[in-house]
Structures are given as structure tokens and as C-alpha cells.
Length: 136
Image (cartoon, rainbow, N blue to C red):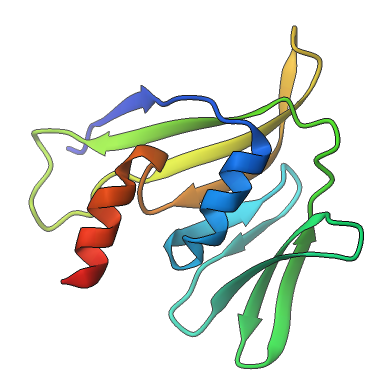
């Protein structure tokens, strides 16, 4: 039986999150909206950039072929909310550590709505651990 403990992380402003995410494209497992999703695969890679109007752009690429693209309209982004699913003590050592869900929240501050989401292999506050793992 697998149990998951959900831990809500700090909220971030979108610009700070985007700058950080651009340094972690290989950690993205999924990106999408409530209507569509792009999933990572060993043969694909993520490319994060901005268009001429400085809108964030997320691309999923196979070789030199664009497979999927998401242009983010974040002019009304309130914050980015993170939720970390940590492995519990009952999990085995063979299982993946918890993944982190980042949601770009828009709308009113009374009723924020998730417009975009990103699932990463680690949370925002694990940057130093990530760099240590990548060096090994």
C-alpha cells in the first residue's frame, strides 16, 4: 500500500518562479492547463523561452521537431502555489521520491483558479539537493 503525505510549500510570484524554472527544464515531468497536458519522455526535451511580447513559452521538442507548445498568458497571475507529495515511511527505497506540483493561480484573490500547472521531480526549496544529485 502506497501512502502519500501532501505538503504545501511557499507561494511565489510568477516572475521568480519562471526564472527558477528556466534553470530546471530537465526536471519537468508534466506541463499543462486544465484542458491539455504535455508529458515528459526520454526522447523529448523541454525548451523554455519568451516570445516577442515577453510571454513565457514552454515547448516540448523531439529532435528538431516541435511536438507541443504552450504560450502562457500571465498578465493576471496572482502567485504560484507549490504542493509537494513526499514519500512516506511505508514506501520502499525503489520508489521515486515525491514530485512537486506548481500551479499558476489567476483570477481574484478571493477565488484564485489554477490556469497552468507544472509537475517537477523536486520542489522549489530543494535547489541545493538538486545540484548535488546532478553532480553525482
